Image (cartoon, rainbow, N blue to C red; front, side, top):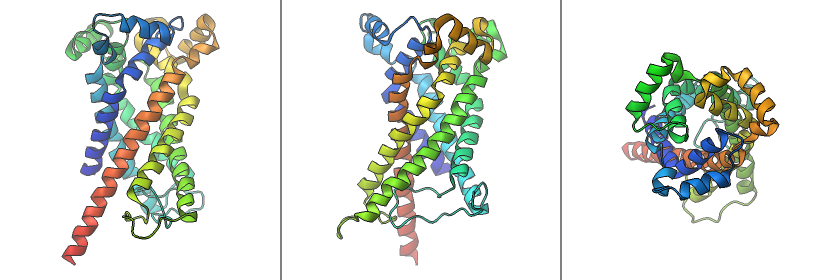
Length: 316
């Protein structure tokens, strides 16, 4: 469990720091439908410190994504191991830890239902725990607030909105994150299985360094990365309306009130397209961040398992 936490933390912090500009641009585009990506980017590049502005909010983002990824991956692994061990949530009543002859995965193989359910439950639970830092992160990135520190943001929210302010938009966040995570794990595992079958059709020549799954390590990483990009793109496109509503609620809770009211008001005032604000940016960022995080996570797990197996064999 501890290693899964560390692997998730490392992958989360790395992806958050690298892709913070895309997250900041998405937030500012979503805060008002009258603002386009071109206008936002031009305003930032003309500011006194454009690079600093693009990476504004990196600390809360790294904290949120790093700790969130650590909690998510460790809890997801525990759930998946439990489901596989007791054959839960399986359409056929039978789950399996067995892998195909060639597989890019270091994780238990579960049914589609189990992949969907475990991903959604783990993400919703972690999302609730990380909600306060999520609200601070979004407001840090927005141009509507001028917080100078995390502590300053925390005290400002507490004074003006109380405890509830730290959970603004949780309903929309949960409805966005739970389906996103469930769909992501489902699409990710399906994509890995299908791409891995190509390796079974055309196996690698003998003499190449293989992992403990019968597949070259670089091939496993490539399959995982491509699967991550595809899964994130599909899951993001389906759940983007909830992300747009969530951003408005976290930035202007007094105006929008709750998720349903916010959705209706956005459509009335700005049209149905407002629910798709930031879609391209979110798809690009999610595709890269998820692919990086999951590929790095699986590679760290794979290498650790190989070392443990080597040590066990040397002892025997």
